[in-house]
Length: 76
Image (cartoon, rainbow, N blue to C red; front, side, top):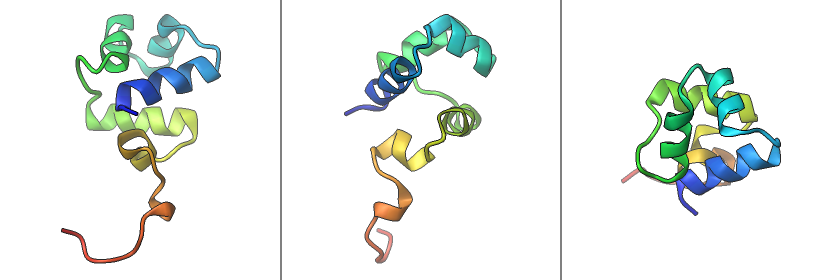
C-alpha cells in the first residue's frame, strides 16, 4: 500500500471529505488530492501534522508499520 492509499483510507475511515481534511491541515483540497494519488508528497511538517491528526505514527504513514513493530538491529 502506498502513502497515498494509506492517506485515502485514513480520511475515509473518519468520513471526511478532501475539503474538510484540507481545512483542518491548512492546505488546499488539491494538495490532499495529489497526496492521495501519489502525485506529490506532504512536506515533513505536514506529515507530522497528519500523523497527529489521525493518531498514527509517521512510520505508519510512510511504511505501513509502527516503529514498535520494527525488528531491532543495525540501521543500513
